[in-house]
Image (cartoon, rainbow, N blue to C red; front, side, top):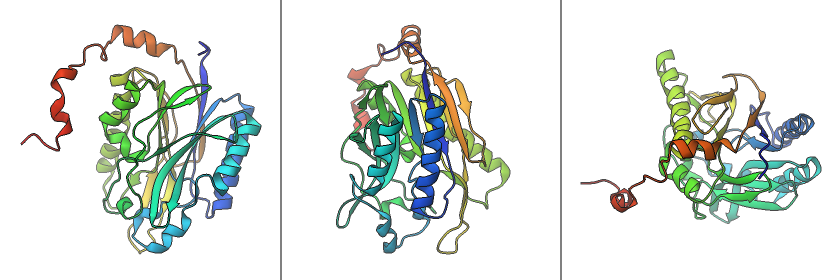
Length: 295
């Protein structure tokens, strides 16, 4: 692996109203990224359309597509043309009645380098994902690429230190989180800020605890609820950290943005030497972590 910094980009977008319009915007962002010398691009969660999980409706399953499929064909062709490592996020139709929230990785090629199926599935007001997504069954396995081993996780996974740790223990060089998270418009300003700060803090903690850079791409903009609910104000704030949780770049709350940063992968080795958390883990004493609760 080269000691030269890795130039990464996060594409923070709004829903543009159709699959074709969203993919057109992604293509434009990828071309700008390539022109800027970017090597690795992370897209937001379920970037082909709106965040449809605000309600439960079987018609929303029509949004799903096979992998490989039309979106992977277009995105893979762009990854090959622009010589980019690309992490995208799709609603996967695996079989009739079987659907996943799936991240797909391309490595400067139209061929799929690897996939990750979201493991932790929320079921909260306006985030009714359990209705749509079967929990992942591929485990926590990094994807080998030309820029390193990518520990790709998806949105709700970001609240679980176990997921980040397992990716780190499998040799991930970076942790990446395509995300769709935002506010209930009814919450007051103080609560909104507490929520966003918690979201940033926990992922910076994954960087610190594992000595790894973290990339997080979130969507932005207000999306109305199809059932007449309050909708979601997605809070953007996509960011990149180094292996001590230091913020290398952060996007705005409410704007579409192409966020570019340089990541020094070699720093992970230096940080782990002074903070040898992996050395000092008491693996002999952690058996109860496999329990739901220590009653």
